[in-house]
Length: 314
Ligand code: ASP
Image: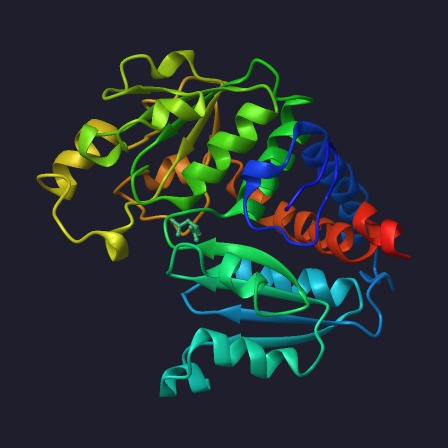
């Protein structure tokens, strides 16, 4: 969110990088209250009645698109979902023209996923709506980081001092970038593990450490596994997937009892993670998906209803 002070929540959520800890906690606290709505028979609150949310997805998505749609609907917004396949984007309409067309509906928010780094930032310059980055290339995926922080805070009480290992293809992962920032803000210690070809040079500047082997994995409280992002790979970064799996695949045998296992999905069973590890009681993957709805409700609410920048202009 563009933040103009501490604990300030701006008009957009473009990057986790400008949220301080208080702003993150505020969103997570709000998400707790919306998680309660999910337990009701009628899972709806009137907060966004009469307002429109546009979901614009230029890249494949299952969890993020469905949970944003559900989140907006549970807040009683009118929702328009546009996917590049089957829309005029297919016919070559530019991002700018598409945003300007959809802005004619006077949306309160535009949720955008794009394969291009910086797309959400650009959209924010073309519309009066609040813009939420639902993933821009390999850059950032801030709502994923918030829902992961929410899931861990619920499970651990707090992230302070938690040792979180992020294992796999960090180089192509927007989740890694947003999660390192969010986990660090929340007081966790982050270690990145993967083949050196898949760990970006200089990433330690974000306040994490790196290692090329799983040797110290037993010291982790949380093991966060990343997918091999084949769609973003132009070269071959590992000799073979079989060799990658033998060195880095997270299996039940490699996990210590009590370690928590996370993955943003979609998973490649048998590549970065084994089937039995996914299905083990240590896995929080289902809880992460569930948290997605409450956290995205909280983000929409904070941007469109609860944010101090609105109070300032009211
Ligand atoms: N779903 C996440 C993303 O959109 C992670 C992944 O695709 O591996 O970045």
